[in-house]
Image (cartoon, rainbow, N blue to C red; front, side, top):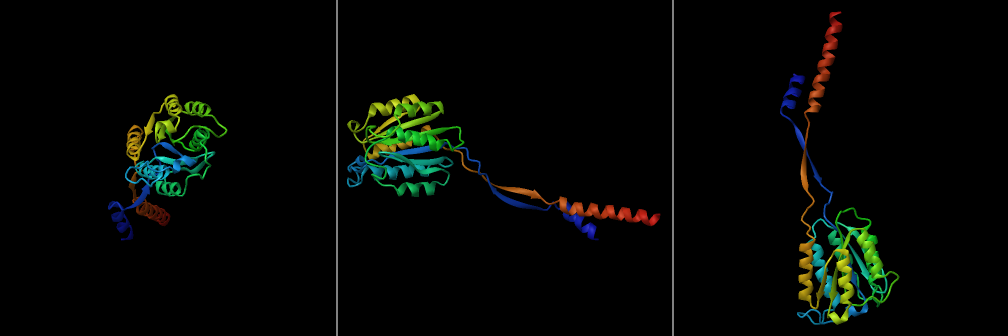
Length: 250
């Protein structure tokens, strides 16, 4: 009776569901390199709120951009007189936005080290494993500080296949438009000019389209059949029974 019950259970194909998440992300490795020099404290960039600084508006739109990146592995580099990684590459975009919000104008000094910003971004990207890597550089100034030259940084980015998108914040006379165009062109990226909050918002939307992030992490239920367990018990008892009957006959 016991063996019969086990065989019925086996024929019923018992199973359990193992809930698993596919953590193998297939998006891009993407760095936002944001200028936090003194000039980013200027107001008037947002026509809807003239009291907002360029930096505050840039952070607000950057957070909105981050929110839409789905499975991208993203990081943030803040620069001024020097550059530092405010957040390493991470899939936790909520944490990334939080860390971005803790930064302020002047946190990295008052000058503009574009070369160091790119070098630090490239270094941060070396910890990622995605095939597609890109840097989005936002600045409102001229390169006037740091140890690395933009030319040197672009050369290294090109060798590693890293695209650089540059965004000039404010009026064109305020930043080195020619340098930003050269950086983008030589790295295979694109250069933009944003003189207002509306234009910067449009730039982020275009970059979002050029560097799409459409692959989401998959959540699935893995079915595990449990037929093996009752059948193995049945076969074990049958084997023991056969051995027992043979010994009895002898």
